[in-house]
Image (cartoon, rainbow over all chains, first blue to last red):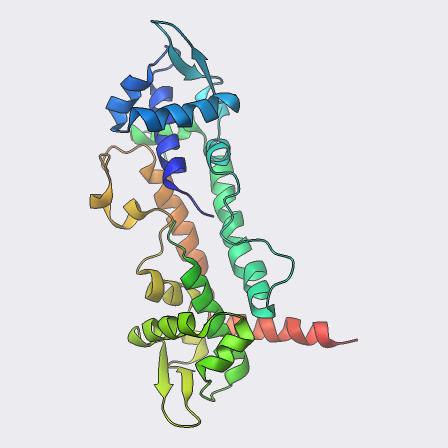
Length: 136
Length: 145
């Protein structure tokens, strides 16, 4: 599993959006709340919009909102949209025997455990956790 | 993500020593040939492992690297820490001061901490002895006609 800045910032940004419930939120608002650059947010949100994670409304009163309930969006989905393949290792058909063994018995196991966590955790869980309500 | 390529290669190098060294000092050149990792890269890696007390070097014409402890006392977690400093998928878990956000209220931090814990527990539970036995067993099975 590999998580870049984009995935980390993107998850923070979509959680900021989720905190506002159903109201439309402008990116400049999120930029301010999360201390992220507007340019960066624009590229992240256009990607999330294409993947139907968020919906955008244009115009003076426009902004973004979540396309589904926070309890229906998993951390995995958000990261997968922004990161693509999150596997630790490169998957190649021919590898030296030691690399092949460790890929199968160490790195793939770790990838699996991380994926399991990400699939289980929804945006709602993270919101609850941030408010000290729950354990992930 | 801080599980670097270098730490993966370190585990490969250590598994080579464990599986093919059998207490004999192994020249870095041989490890390089066996793992397809460049010699310069491996020299850097073994230097770091030596500094952490995981390997030692034997000088001379039959010199090379040997594990500095029994194989069941060396874990994958120790090897990754020797190379990466800490096991952590994102930098802010180990160093909250690196965060440009507010660590105490960061909405994603609990998730990264949970992931870090899962990775750490997995790596700390794998010993070089386990890896060596598993690898040699699989290799033997593949060599049967």
